[in-house]
Picture 1 (cartoon, helix red, strand yellow):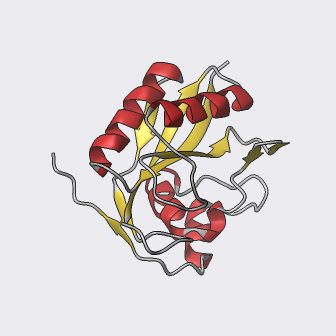
Picture 2 (cartoon, rainbow, N blue to C red):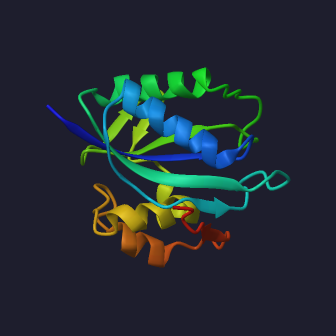
Picture 3 (cartoon, rainbow, N blue to C red):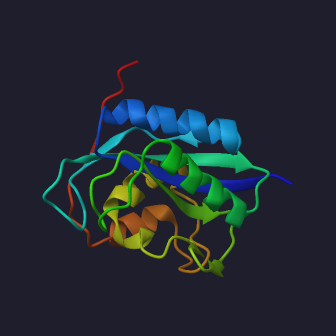
Length: 164
């Protein structure tokens, strides 16, 4: 069975675009093919603001992995890429969040799907809106486009022009 997972990747250390590209290659190698990806978006740091801006990108992944195994694999990719969890909301080379998994609602230790804060974070909604504007949140019963319109987060999120 093929599962569809929406991911958000981001980072604010190193060569940010190169690190996101490396994360994509690792996700493809260990998890499955990427069906869609958004543009890159630059966002001021959220939660801990005294750090460099982040680059973020939304991805649609097809995977044979069940959600818990996918989460474990994504955390392994973060670790392999040098992610250090030193402080909450602190700087990081890579962050890989699972936003949705199929249309499932999952509550397990270390895994809550849909991501419980995604509707409150413009840096998640803007790139998600680019690739899945009509996707309906399985709990809130609103599309990504509707959630973006209602989002009260005013953090600046800028689409980065493509270099290709």
